[in-house]
Image 1 (cartoon, rainbow, N blue to C red):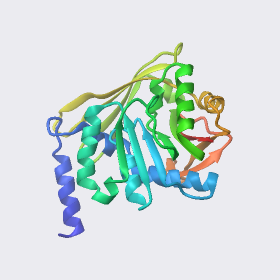
Image 2: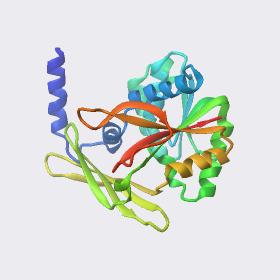
Image 3: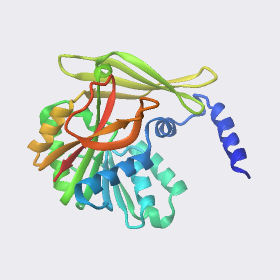
Image 4: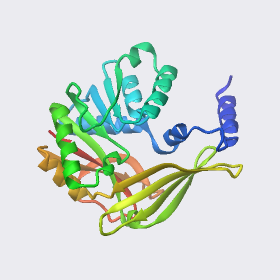
Length: 279
């Protein structure tokens, strides 16, 4: 079968998506996650900070463990641990492991159902907290406890890599649609409280036949700022807290996928940044 035929078939199938026939975890991966790009960024950060790549990784709040799955495929020496509280999503992930990883690769991936605050694992070189997952901790003391727990799980030269979002639009109650292959992803900033910093965000999905999956995912978070997160990393005992900012494509004025360490950012309407806690 030619590549053109395969692509055409995939697009045809995608265009026939409906709410009833769709899997929200698959839709989430297609619309939110880019595990290959994430791992390229992890490698870049490691080369910047330590002059090498890492091989052992723990993905906290791992969900479908998309990054952990891709990590063990990246290099034959790579090992990964995924930690999440949800039985249902971990079972979904195990099905994907059976479908996408061979026996040798899957033997280097360990999924744990547990709380990231008290799940102990062997020390790793890298701990990840992506997709703003730690924003569920709304109190400063909770974030500090989590960051201290992460530091204890790292090897002596380990790196804690996490992400954050912000910008002037992040304080607005608004919806943003993004058309993808066969469905529309809707990011709904449903509620923001300027006194507490609490936010309620939803993800909805819409389909060509007019059907919808409303509130496929809901997040009750606190919108933490970069200075707050850096201060908490240092207070937790990390020797330094670095911020990585994405460059801009001159033609499109969009992010170019190249992340570099910065001391200052831009007052954008919306941005995503990586932070690195350096042990």
